[in-house]
Length: 479
Image 1: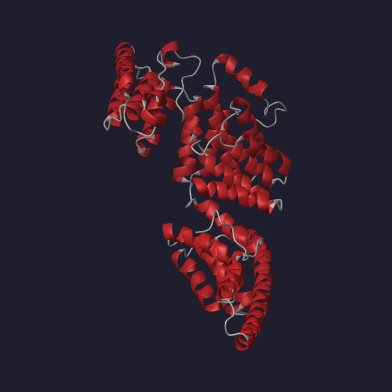
Image 2 (image 1 turned 135 degrees about the vertical axis):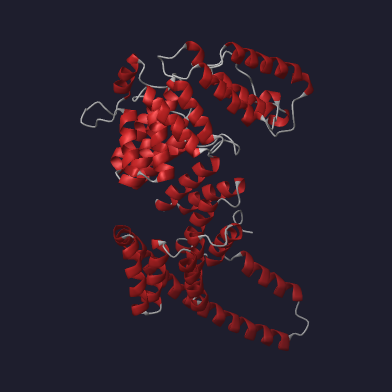
């Protein structure tokens, strides 16, 4: 998480602020970082950098930035399989050298959390850092992140996020960069990028749990002021702005987040989000282009496959293309609930009621407590099959699980299910027309063959091929 970055506060010693050594990690790897090892002509430079970092830690064992620089160097450049245990040992040495430094203790917790996935160890270090300094921003924020993402203790997460950000919306200037920079005059805040991470995580918490879109938007804007080029931040801000129907500003954020290359971090996510926004705005061709670009980078990116599948079915009326997208997800995850629901909807539009009911049932059987699966199946049973009593049982179960969520999602899913009924009628009508056309065409060819047995076969083959090429398709996303 962004808040879990490592940085010393301004009040710390200079040596804990940044490493004395900057190494061009990619320059020391053949082929721009593909892991082929150190280029021979740079091996000496790599050796000197590593020795310099080791000397720095020997002189200053509590320089956590040097510890992390050495760990990254050994991982990326040296491809050292023991880099993590070595970094863990260096952090323990730092703790022995400076046991009362909250920055050292918090940084060790972050390493345990993010690199070693040691949640209990991280929580122990964050607790100790807060015993030393109860106002330590990163310790509060990182503990909040654990409660937010791991223990689901939302009340404690809220309390800790508020403390980390000095949250006071009663102050008119609270959501301004100037207000928080004034706080930093006494050394309260970590580095700008780390504080942006704190605000980002709190914004995500407000966005996800409190559903307060305006407050989440304000926190994201403040985070972007501290870290203007953070792609993850720009994506989340674009998302909340879209939910607030501020589509122009949302698009501006996604444009700022556009990847310079396919290798850029969050490239697929940015293209996906931007594509979904264009679909929401009815710009279907641009949406298809962006979603296809995302799938060219990662053909099995599940959110993009799901979004593209829905757009193909509901907006482009291309059930075959939608089926390909949902099957692609199910090849990776046979029990994916949204893919099962989407594939069921494809079968529903085609009038394949047995398969549709089977797929909806698989979704509810695999995910017995999933409110979305229960509601989708209930709506299908009620509106398409007129099985009202069976649908009522599923509605009741969904409400027992989460009444507020069930009511909210029902209002969203009901118009979609009505659209599917309309599409099913359209599909049936098209099939009838196609079958009539095929029958007429067949009769015509029989007449021609009767009149001229030597009719050129290649013309018939060309006609069949043309009908396939003219069928609705999205080539780049198809298989």
